[in-house]
Length: 443
Image (cartoon, one colour):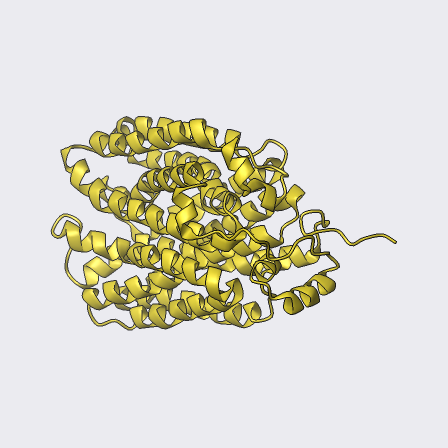
């Protein structure tokens, strides 16, 4: 009699693609929303009569409010996902997004926008640890890297749609354009909630929590076999700073440093266009549409190689290119502001390799099922603190000159490169439980 394969041994099926696509819609919405605000901040500040120069703190809070919410949602919902299950939190987090994104679009002043977007960010931040966790827990070992990168690639599909919406809504007038752009995101999320209701609970989570009746039914429907039960060794959040301290240090600090440089520059790209004399909003929106496909192509390349080349090499290459672009950027755009577009395309494309691998692969692969949601959620929270710092500090430091602002980012990208070089393990094609085993972390 031929035994069914385990989850790690199973062939890639349509089920994996459907589940990964539904999980990835959270990153799609994240990419859409954060790309919308980086452009619509120009319009919102006009409507409510302030600017980056007149009130940099208020402008920074407008940009970072969702990131602040994500910092709250990541660790709290990640912890709940380990206790209540992945599926339950998968539905609740998008309901947060729908309600508070709609309220953001109806806000009557900039302070309401900031408050509602902070609460909306809680939902987006919650989706990160759950999305990557559920993809990794169902994915076959040989294609886990590709499925995880497929999931995070949706961020840039959302960014591409944001560029189209930003451009299309300009004809509505300033007071209506930003409102419609926000509410479009809420509308997109509604069918995703309904579709996610049909997804199964994580089989690994059910087994670890001794819910074997449900686990056996799901295993039978997927034609896979369960190879182990709940086990006698229980993991807790304390283990992140004990048995798993190296993995925790690597993921938290490297992702934190990455987000300082990534979000710090990414959020101000539209603003930099204007600061350097490109005042046409339609032109700036068009630049967003032009640049978005290139990171998608970078992810397609990573999907093709990540389970053969591995995780380490693309991570290190991506950090090196990011640092090089940041060093070149001030001198080139001083000569010609239009060079910001190709520089941003190169930067945004290569940053996806370390960014995608840190946020969706390493952060979910390196930790055991019992604490995977919390570990990923904690990493999301710490990374978003880095993102907030990058966005808030960049305009302050750049008052002395753009070179100082980009050098500030280079320091953190160099830190992330060094930490990855020393601590990043290679996890390609290894069974998930083997990657997250204590033995693996002691080698």
